[in-house]
Image (cartoon, rainbow, N blue to C red):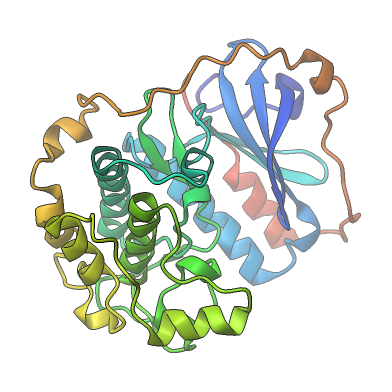
Length: 332
């Protein structure tokens, strides 16, 4: 990859599908010349005439770019962004260790492992919140593991900017099981909603299950908004304490809700053994190092191409210009 010269889709070999959603697909791809592996997100242009959708795309690229330029180890960063006739493509860091959800399965994690991944997430949120960005969709599927076993926050599609510690926002966002009570009650919320989601993730890592679960959506909402979780008797005092304080129903009472929220979380006794400086420098051995996968993707990659589900209407001129401005290439 040459800095300043956006690549084209022909520069990449699509190897496998990593994920799929309403936006399009995410592929594991390899840059043909350099051999660099990326996660290539292909977003169909048919919805870009919607201002909200386009604004989300611009913000997502801005966060990806910020993470890349400031070398944040705990966020997925941007490698390149470019267009095809019908797609906007983001080539992003490829997290070769999969996601936290796959690692969790139905097993709970050890305290040491939970502390490590939680600390990585905290440093990712620290970066976002220092830039006044709320993630608003934290969940194990959006926590990816790099080749060193470090956790990175991904997927900024629902993120909001301009979120200082006391900025309020409105609207539906996030994933049900990990959404804060105030969001489900359709009340205003702050970036402290991210700390609630972290609490749910820590709970699941330590217990091997969700704190609020039911078969009916309305029962799940009722549990999240009005009941307290049950805690394992095997939890340490420190583990119990951070969960109770992150899972406060009142967002103003929640650990992390204050002006120095990240520092308050980092100073929790749950992290008393954590060397934050060493973690920031990636000097701590991760508890789980992903295995080298020698899978041959050639057979599958021959049939993988970008497809269009809906032929888009012509984009308005401002959108065309804005998409052109999103094109970018980092140095390899």
